[in-house]
Length: 240
Image (cartoon, rainbow, N blue to C red):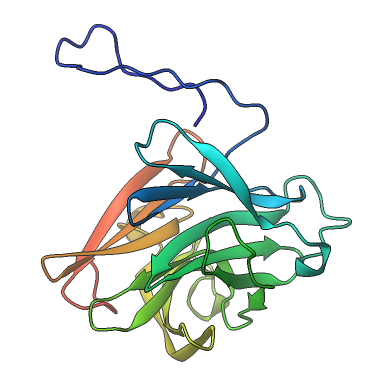
């Protein structure tokens, strides 16, 4: 999104591109594909309108087509600090409907909004009070079930060390926009809890050849930041 291109010294490169540097900020990007088009959104914290939507057909040229949050009745961000508010939205597309799930930090928790058109209008938020955490994302399985995965508190709220978090899962009723069933812990701590890994977060689920893959960030946002992958034969684990 902000000034990217290929390496000039790479002899295998056939195409090069340079995007303009955009004003503003574009953290926590999330992308989905619908038809021939890609759609990308990002965090906007306490700024309004919130959650811009960009459209592209080639992943190089992007066009701003709207905002998910553009009506005052959707959300009140008054009084929130510049680093609070809308955190890490995730966009998905399934059977003609676009979904965005997100965390509204310090002002309501996790919510979902929907629209049949990416440019909107988007629905008012439906909050999910059962989800205690951040970074939710949706996964649409090939058996018709939908799941929501997110970062949450340690088991029984008992932290073993600073930065101890879990990755948890609920089944999601996409018709009524609510979680159902029993909450499940997929990952406790991180790749190896004996090493006290910090801030397992940003989970996304994928399925390839009947195997489930859980991709997360681990290590916080400083020099120990990393991406990790877990896999399982079953949606609810165990993940290794």
